[in-house]
Amino acid sequence: MAPYLLVFPALFILFVFVLLPLILAIVFSLADWDLLSVEVEWVALDNYIRLFQDREFWQAIENTLVFTGVMVPVTVALAVALAVLLDTGVRGIRLFRTMMFVPYLTPMAAISTLWVWMFDQHFGIINWALGSVGWHGIPWLTRPGWAMAALIIMKIWKVTGYYAILLLAGLQNIPPSLLEAASIDGAGRLRVFLRITLPLLSPYVLFVVVIAVISAFQNFDQIYMMTRGGPAGNTTTIIYYLYQYGFEFFEVGYASSVALLLFVLLFALTWLQFAVSRKWVHYG
Amino acid sequence: MKLERRIVSLATYALLIAVAAVMMGPFIWMISTSLKTFDQVFQSPPQLVPRTWHWSNFADAWRSAPFGRFFLNSILTAVAAVGLQLVFAVTAAYAFARLQFRGKQALFFLVLASMMIPIQVTFVPNFLIIRGLGWYNTYFSLIVPFSVNAFGIFMIRQAFMQVPAELEESAQLDGCSHLQIIRHIMVPLSAAPIVTFAFFSFTWTYNDLFWPLIATSRGHMRTVQVGLSSMIASEGGAGTRWNLIMAAAVFIIAPLLVLFSFLQKFIVKGISTTGLK
Image (cartoon, rainbow over all chains, first blue to last red; front, side, top):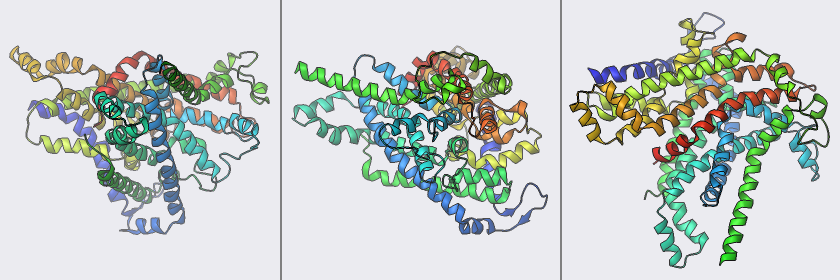
């Protein structure tokens, strides 16, 4: 009896607030139901058909892929470089490692207000700095393209340090004897890094890529605080689209179909990453 | 050889300082802005260190919205959610790591499956569930849906599996109950991962904007993050008082940094021992 009593509370709550909602989302997605009216009409796959015919939804997919496709590779590359830098044993390295953690810990909402201020077109510190090298008045946050760039830059700043710390744990697990043996054999630093360090680090890199993609797809707070999906829908990602239909227009059925599509897309992407990883990840 | 080593370490420092400047710069700018007068904020060229420090901005920001209440809500929510998560995770993790029972695999699979579901996918149904339960605009809606964290169960289970079996067996011979074994053996030996999880979970709950935004609508149930977002919405436009907004951002971020500096040692150890592979 004891084991069941120990696991029951946890499983009960997981069931009610995580698994049951997923099942409910599937059921709701088959209905035309907005919260303001009481009527519920079963419409089979109409919500999904509407979804695929909606140009704004396609734009949301495109925006999500642009955000993820730029943010993830740049972040991971920077994080690997930073991890190597943090792996050096120079004095005071602990303090530097701690600093890298801070942007990740701080709340996205509060930090977003800081970056809105820094990106301010007329009085922001970023445009002031760029102005001194001849770039004037960049309309961050108010012009399509620039707004997306601003979001990506800020997100990279926020997560790179944390990913570097995760990768650092991987670097420190590599037996120093392997690296020594290679350099005794006359391999240069770069060669040792590319041929030995990087392959041994690859499981950690895969982990970081997977969580970076998930975090890019779930990036709501930043967009809500910095752009509200604008200008002209240019930063409306799938998650923001879900928020609009679920909690601004209260279209329960339609929003549920968006949620499920987000789930399926993320699941497929994660699976794809593991499938492709067989080609580049080495488990030592 | 010695010279080369010195050059390398100098270059390393130069790079580290450059990266640290990029990571910390925005925070310094935030603090700098929070201490300026309204006029100084829009001065050109911008000043990093304002001539006079206006500490009164913090008091003004605090009064510009019911931040006392927002803090109470945020801290209460985060502490309660993390406390419940720890209790439920530790007991479930112990059963999954140490006990044999029928259906264990299937039940553990449920835990893993809930880790795979992006939390926002559940928000529309959960919004209806908490409304149906009459929990809209109450602490229940902010706490109960997050009172179990599948990732926490998984992480603590990993830690419990590493505890040597002999310790547990000798405790059983001494007549310890399951709860005593959990309290006196499992938890103390897994302190680093448990503290790490608790800290991250506290951070996630305290930092979250999406769920509190939709699960509450009344001012007195808002959390600090939602409170800040409405402060900006009401400021808006050309005359935005950035000094006050930055002051609010400073006191919203500060508690996390204080907590982190206290728990740092545990967290560094927790990240390296729980491993990722």
